[in-house]
Length: 261
Image 1: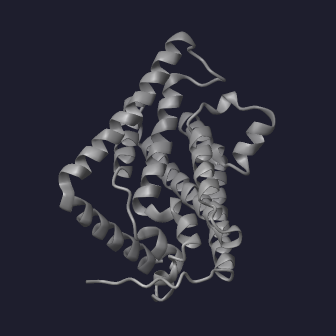
Image 2: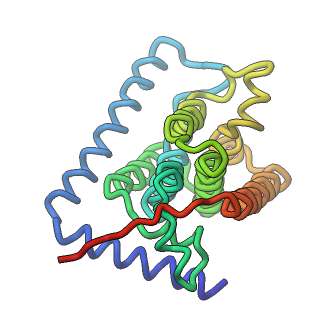
């Protein structure tokens, strides 16, 4: 485990160093993403001026929701940047390079790319969490733990939907729509979902485990639900690894030849 963590951190340092070669672009993309996310909170602020309570959720709950989803999305696409590109990579035979190396193919594939704008999401999430107020050491520690669990759920979910390409060829559209769906569901107050839609957010599109349940725990901490999120995160990560490895048995090399001058 230590070697795997060291490997991820080494790639993160390398990707950040490469991004900082174009410092102005990196900073502008980061700031642009913070402003983009901030505009959505302005919308919610205006909405809650008219409707102070939505499904039992207040404005501070939605701010914390956006905070935890933004941090988990940012870390997921920043550290494991290829998680949302897995489907086209499989369809185009671009896993060949990673399969020839001694490191775990899935982990190496995920960490070999970084989305620079993702760090704007992380920064925005931290700012939003601080802005929500009512900070205590317990709540801060809980936010960090839940954000890491949510990040694991987000990355694993994308690996699972991306791995569909092993069996069905080009699944880029399906993968992209699934990612959009989980983020969209996760950034709306959990109290508005009822019936089969609520069941959907706990199962096929686990937006509730990504955002709604963590926010409930930031509001009213309880050990059992936190352990439930941790167990779900561990389970979906294990499922993602299993699905990817099963898919590798179906993988056909792209026979890519790269010419370097």
